[in-house]
Length: 133
Image (tube, rainbow, N blue to C red; front, side, top):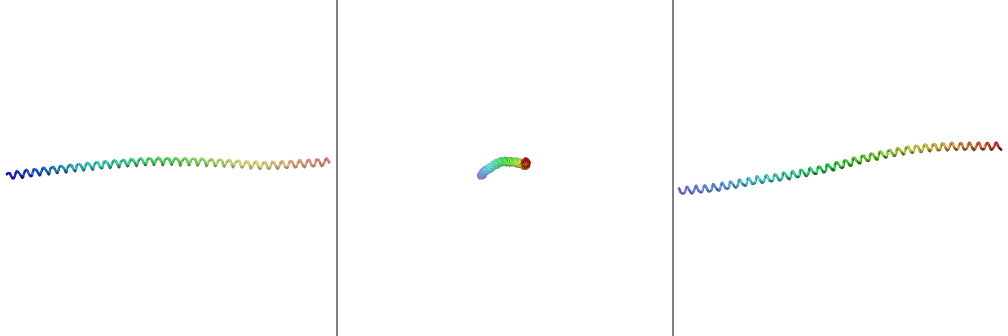
């Protein structure tokens, strides 16, 4: 009977040890689960932060693209205005050139008419002198 009681006490003691080992394992598993959850949270927030950083970088690049587009449009408008100004100036120069040519032709015609008139007058004067003599 005494021996049986000793065996039972020994079994109870071993059972307590096993229960304590089991509790330790349960705590270790729980700790591992919590640690894994924390690591996932950290990774997720890091990933989220990286995503936000990339989004900000994309917004910055979009602003740069918009600025370059605006500069190109401004340059195009400036170029078109400059080309129009050059065409207008060329048209005015052509008009002035035509007017100068017409004036030159008129001047030549006037000079020729004046020369003829002067020759007529000189001829008439010469004829008149000849009659007087």
